Image 1 (cartoon, rainbow, N blue to C red):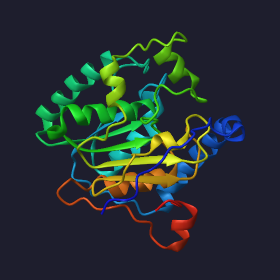
Image 2: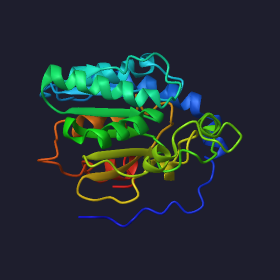
Image 3: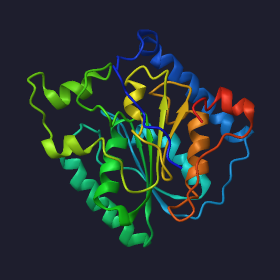
Length: 261
């Protein structure tokens, strides 16, 4: 059942308090990552299908090690992006399409793609280009509805506009980025994000295969945030054939961890 269209309105920069505390909050979330795995019964019966994980701008596969280890323990075949640091180039799309083809040939099944921040923008574009090879997409704080807007992620704005009004990316690609992918997509966002405006990290309209989920936490900590990890563990077993919405377990979890559901 489709939900009401999400309006962005006047998108503002993230709150200065959330921006100033990004680092310390991410450290706290990293500190919660280890006990979360030991104190919670995490299912380890994944079907082994491949999961490609893409890092954010200026990050590399080092940043996704905890996330990749977690997903590996769930029972899936995990792939990093393997391109060093993410310097945000249109060339990455073609390189990642080749990687997608390689993984698909090796396993013969559709691939789930998880993208963090800018990595989520790439993930959605891969799914649009080759939906028959993509099982689902999960984005973590990815501002796909406003990649050319100035915000606290000034690197994104400057990178695309270069301060001259001229984008480094093709106009067709820029215009297509906000459009949803034709595969099940979960857009995870936080209203406490101190890097990108949370309203830009949501699908414009939710429907049977597109869901927005709010969590509490920092932008830099999304890859280790226990609330995010639980969503990922819940989503990966599903495919387009049996897709269903994520629902919190109980009122307390609904109010504290996932206030938007």
